[in-house]
Amino acid sequence: MTEDVEWFAGVDWASQTHQVCLVDAGGKIVGERGFAHSGAGLAELCSWLLTMTRAAATAIAVAIEVPHGPIVEALLERGFRVYAINPKQLDRFRDRFTVAGAKDDRRDAHVLGDSLRTDRHCFRQLSAEDATVIELREWSRMSEELQQERNRLANRVREQLWRYYPQALAISDDLAADWFLQLWAAAPTPATARRLQESTVEGILKRHRIRRITAAEVLVLLRQKPLTVAPGTAEAASAHISTVAQRLTLVNRQIKQAHQRLDALCDRIAENEGDSATGQKSEQRDVTILRSLPGVGRIVLATLVAEASEPLRRRDYHALRTLSGVAPVTRRSGKYCIVVRRQACHMRLRSAVYHWARVATQLDQRSRHRYAELRKRGHSHGHALRMSAIACWQSRARCSPAGRHSILTTRSNRWPHDTRPSLVRPRRSSLRPDLAATRARRAGAVEDAACGTGEAGVSSTAPSTALC
Image (tube, rainbow, N blue to C red; front, side, top):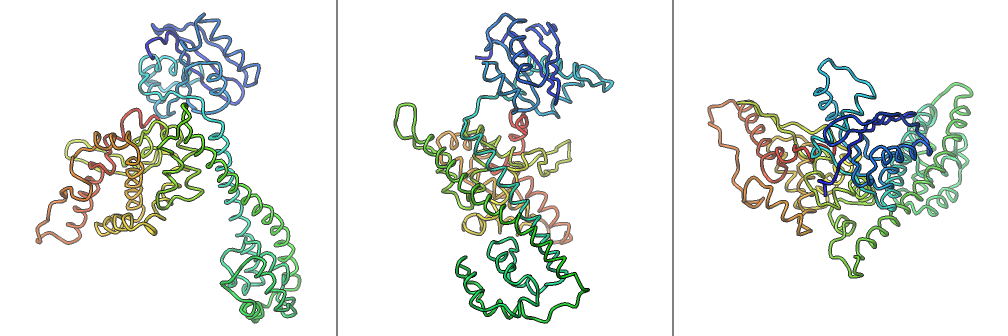
């Protein structure tokens, strides 16, 4: 499948003009040209590649730094083989062509094309994504942006209430909730709170089904002795909150719509996964399996399916751990060996897996026990959660035959997870307590990296790092 590629092209993408370099199987530059970022320009790019090579689109491999965007979609639609690479790896490849550190668009395009010719295993081949997954990814990102906007607006409300109305802050921690905004609208100042009737507050709480606080308790809080502020401060702050409250109402409505859309798209993906080409029901559904795992909710599920659809489809669990930032990185040289946190990862995936592991430790007894054991050994909260996330990925892998085979064949030992012998040697009692704890913690980190829970050497291979 990969031997019939006869031409290699590198695309150095830009915002206005994309530089393309075409080389043959022997590494000779056949042509170089720039194309405008427009519909006509991208169509001309595809036509130029076919004209220069006089070959089929499947015989032309194209290398690019970004794994998404209109350039990638246009090339995939025309049938070209598109490969992506991490910009950091491209910078290392550039050193083979110039040691002086020179860099320009033409050289980068040449480096991409020639490196794809000689080191294709370092690149990741792209494929056309499902339309539902693309839509799910966009709605997932919009939901996150709306939540961030909601937090920013809520902080503005808190700041203005602190100026003249601090007793209202004791009613609820969520100042962006619709019921709190309606309650504030009924009593925007301490003076109006004295005239507020209990039936009005009770009606607001009843419409929004708020039972953690009663109307009488709300009135007691609002009618506390107010702050002494300068004339006009209460009116100015109330006007500011009024404008922010209108935006918060819109954001809350949009967040509800986004959540409903996320649920609908995940259900659609689950239905598509359940129907195979033969019309029979499939036993392995990514959405169904992920939903069954403890700690996976609507947001985490949508993020995992949208941002890691390709590794999930390939059952590449080493790439999943690498992309999520839970696979550690081992730096070993002679007697020096240290295991550090992986920084090159997908930030949204890392956040989703972090909250997945955090909630799993609260709901699942096995995850909670694993987290407690890691904390006893001296690991930090974040490291213990990352190791718990690795265990979650392993439980995800065990749900499919391919995943079970991957775990069994890549573990550095053959003992079960709960019965493997400890690699931490007992220390003499004559050692200082702090020194013994430090050595045990370092040995535990090496053990976690070497065992099947997150083998650093396996996760640092070229195919996995190319996905970062």
